[in-house]
Image 1 (cartoon, rainbow, N blue to C red):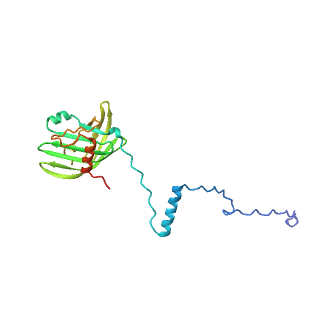
Image 2: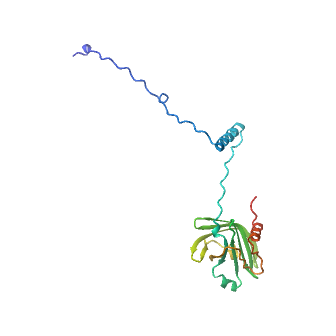
Image 3: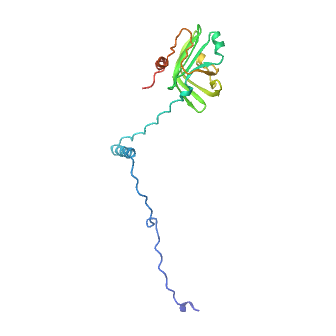
Length: 210
């Protein structure tokens, strides 16, 4: 059939093209802000209007170290060492402070104090102290890490090896749990045996930041 004689079919109107604006978007109902969140949002808004820096969120409080590790530790083979005149005192206060002190009469006295913490199987000491020897004396920041081992007789703290700048307190020997209370063993009674008095001594050796 010739094209000019074909019947014309009715054409359907084209559907309107949908755009991103015409597509309906389901809106979620607004949630009411809590009071702290509303105050925080208001503080940020005010800082933007005044040009001041927005307030920083408060840092979370540090977790207290496990009190089960607190107490007095004695260096391995301490009886033999003390028989030779070498004394090591290691005390972890349950509140997170520590004191390490050593004495070798006529050769060295040393003391370090600061804070201790535990992460996994590692115990960290961070503080400051002084080594006084017959070859000289020096003050130094103190940082040591110990690996915690659990044994039938109690905890064993084995130091992670590092260069010794701490005299008697930098030895590679491990320490064994001895008593939960302070048991000073340095000659001359230079350390108190009261927990409160020993904590006061620690705070004087390594003052807490204000």
